[in-house]
Image (cartoon, rainbow, N blue to C red):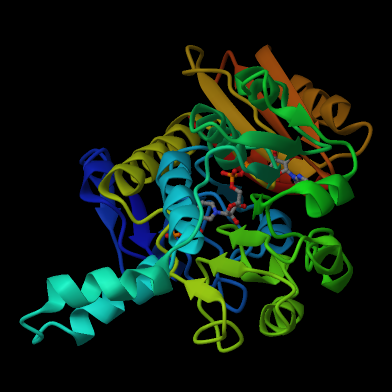
Length: 387
Ligand SMILES: NC(=O)c1ccc[n+]([C@@H]2O[C@H](COP(=O)([O-])OP(=O)(O)OC[C@H]3O[C@@H](n4cnc5c(N)ncnc54)[C@H](O)[C@@H]3O)[C@@H](O)[C@H]2O)c1
Ligand SMILES: O=C(O)[C@H](O)COP(=O)(O)O
């Protein structure tokens, strides 16, 4: 029997995929797996039992990835599962920023008791007029799941699209419309574009990536869209530029005291992934990842350990070993198993950064004493008998 807990509400269509071998619990210390959206986990005590954390979404800045890795907890996310939801909201943001749609709606509400509102509106509408997006230049910073969808959809809407991503995946590169202009210096986006949208993960290296210098290069008519994370942008500098008329609008999905109510800021309450479809997709993918890891030991879409997938185990047993990515580990495992007269039927070891994961299929059951010896190997983080 496995136990899981949810740190945020997770769509039922995903949770229903847990079989009757799974039980929901309320305390993370009793859970084998935790499902999470944006709940902050950095200060949480995770307990020894926890094997997996699945982020039903993309951003993992709310999860202590290294601490989890050191404790042998595999963290998953659900790449692309909410990308369309975000893409659609980015275009809503572009349209909201192009005309004063919010101001116009507010005006209508304020004048709802005016019997002549239709006539008055015709006089007032010039105050909410704006520009179109067709023919404008859009700069997309980060061409992953969301950025690529935004870039392609913008081409379809008749925009000229500039794309910047020095680490673009082959899959994303293949998916891009060939009309997207490849930019190698992000400053070209800042200088040239009418709309600038950022879709990169929040990392130490991307914090305040759009800083005061970047903002100073932008056109005074530029509109900046941030549906990724607020800390990617120096928002104090954005607010200063907006009030000085050096920038047209800032659209953000991350409310905070700096931007909410500030002149030129349009802020939504982190709604990018809040659609039925995105919530369902994320929940389904997250539960599948957790089940495959707990039941088969397979890792797919982890952000702190490498992928390693040997399918279902067809031999007498399977052992999963999370370990440091250093030389000589496999030789020690096979020596220990050999000394216990256990034949290795199949073995796959993958490394990524500081961490690695070995899956070992064996032809006979492995006794507790042998498992204890594997646990003692220097550099081993966690050993799990999967079958
Ligand atoms: N508003 C929301 O509700 C919402 C929803 C989903 C994701 N997000 C945020 O959007 C981010 C992106 O999501 P995604 O699904 O597209 O992720 P992704 O991993 O598919 O794409 C991120 C892309 O950023 C690129 N990148 C990394 N560092 C870069 C840099 N310095 N310069 C340029 N490109 C860089 C990567 O190469 C990758 O292609 C997430 O990390 C998350 O923070 C927000
Ligand atoms: O990174 C993400 O996937 C988004 O920011 C969505 O977050 P949420 O699941 O809390 O809506």
